Amino acid sequence: MLSRVADSLYWMSRYLERAEHTARLTGTNLNLMLDQSPEAAQRRWSRVLNSLHHPAPEAAAEPYEVAQRLAFDLHNPSSVVSSIMTARENSRQVREQISSEMWEQLNRLFHEVKRADMDNVWDAEPHEFLRAVTEGIHLFQGVTDSTMAHGEGWQFIQFGRYIERASNVAALLDTSFQDLPLGDEADEAGYGEWIGLLRSCTAFEAYCHAYTAGLRPERIAEFLLLNPEFPHTVRFAADRLKKALDAIHDATQSRHAERVSRLAGRLGASLGYGQIDEILTGGLHAYLDSIQRQCAQINNSAYALYVTYPIEAAIEA
Image 1 (cartoon, rainbow, N blue to C red):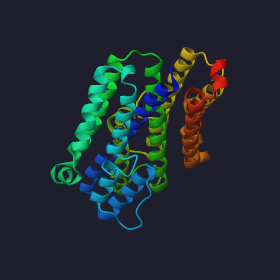
Image 2 (cartoon, rainbow, N blue to C red):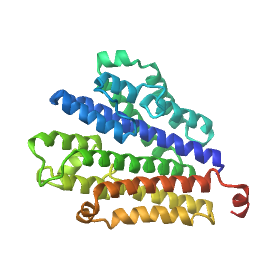
Image 3 (cartoon, rainbow, N blue to C red):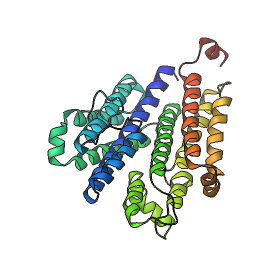
Image 4 (tube, rainbow, N blue to C red):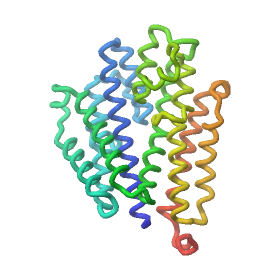
């Protein structure tokens, strides 16, 4: 596969995953504001902004301003609208590699968000707009799985989706657990905060099925980090990105894939064999920071191998 094709498919997928994650967090926190004091809402928005690597405002920001920055700000390359526009541009460059159904769905979503106006959305129902975005991206992902051959190109799409997800969920957990106290069980004040974190990962019902007792912060950390079956956990994403990289390696037969495989394997092993008690004893922040650094290393190594490789490496392969 040409490096430009791999590059476009990879970033198309990453930006769509980023848009879905940002839209979901924004919508969840707008809903939670209904039952929170202004001070609690401000702390929550600060956590959201930090987890998305946006600098938190020095003064208290109005929800309208935060939602506008996260959803519509074209000067913010990671806003929902900017991410969808970038994903669409990447898909346009490789239209011959994706199905017509994929292009039609992404192009439809692009025009829907491009037509939207923050003032009109805010006056009407911002939750509905954000829900429509997440559902549109879910539909695109389903169309991709159903209409595209599961070959090398599809694997680059999976790799982009799951490395973005692993990094995003780790960052969200890191900022949340730095600000929210660990304890035997969530008290009344923190109950809504922990429910909000689970809903931000679409994980509330799944967590309740796994742990029938009350909300315990340690169990929430264990579930969102180490559960191998739920799609929005760090371990699930790490397993899927390694599987995609292994498939890409098998397809390309590259002689230089050992470093990427080793990095992905190390990340998967740390999650597969991790125990929450040991992780908490060693420091949850350090562990989550390590996961994010490992994701960055995997991205850089895979990019150097498959996208920006030197001519000599291509000849040897």
